[in-house]
Length: 262
Image (cartoon, rainbow, N blue to C red; front, top):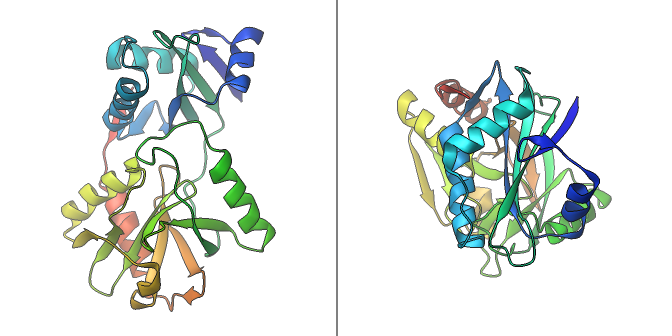
């Protein structure tokens, strides 16, 4: 299953050429199940907020238009991966086009615990989920060539920021710890925080130095396709494990997040 639409119409050659030759724009990705999405309002707000920053002179049509474009591209498909990308219509950037891609749904089952490389790298405009991902992809590729599963970015200040396409959560034996840093505020992270409140599990957000990772017993990567991907090691720090406590609390929190019908 692969379908791409621009503004509600099948993508043409000129549309795809524009996507291939521009790296200015932003997007969000979501998992659709039975026509519903976890955190739909947050996905739509992410798109609106990024458009206001990157395309201040363009009208986006509001969340109702975006929902309509997603529903049109799904065309009754209940389960899918959907990516919504907003790109400039021309060099003036006074108008935008919305590309909706529909592909096979992703499983939320975790892989065997990852070995993660820690590198000093800071994305441009880290608060945005933008399409300029060459540096990110290059770092991920180098990590995999070196035998790692993925990569964690650390700022020049020595504090943990974010993974390649995920936020990181730590367990200190009593609570979930989210690094506070200049990074993408992941939708899954926000939803998990809400779920943790509902389940009564304490959490905190604070700056986490890469040199202090040994103080945690477990770590996990979180994103909208997998709420808890265990990490076995980050750089030179291995996590002894906590009998699955972190994975259990994150998945219990995820189960508390409601589905929003498109």
